[in-house]
Image (cartoon, rainbow, N blue to C red; front, side, top):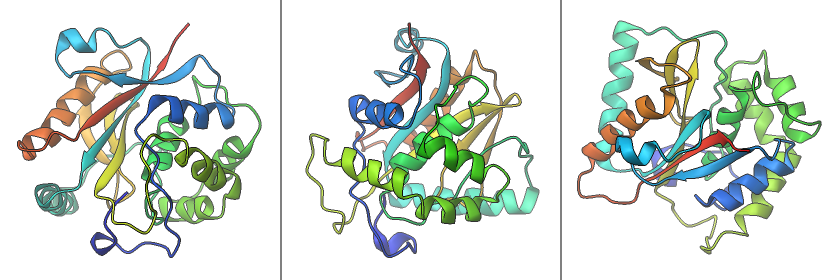
Length: 237
């Protein structure tokens, strides 16, 4: 989800997926994710509020406004990583985004794809996509996604179920990203960035708390902005 003048995108623009757990959970279940795995709202980032989130937490997603402060930080961060380098696990699943407003679906794919050791996905479009994308690079995964009609059509269908009416041709300045733990490291997965971002050590048990710290940094860069939404992919009974 982003303004067209901020990044070059493929010709097709989707209606953005709403940051509504009910809608996203329908998307997950439509694609064979077991019903025990659900997206839930994270109502606050302080320890007491985080303690209310069911465990285990497999991934954390953040919906945030694309602002000038974000763009400036993004450029500075990229330049610093290109200069100093970073370690990225070979086991991490990361893909680029080049369809406007597809970031919600890509965020969900990032969440599930990096937890296939825990989440047993039933046969269907998502499982087929992940198997085909497994050994591809991030750009090739994006191209494969662009041609995955079953996933794209599910996005289109569920985008219409949200409470907010949206036009795919209107500029959207909100964006979804995902945080996951892989091989003991916290990664930020944003298809608009040049690469995944290594945010240092974490664990499956502390993923939520460590991701919350990075979410707070996003918020601190835009102190006058309140349009942030945090959700988590969790296992429930």
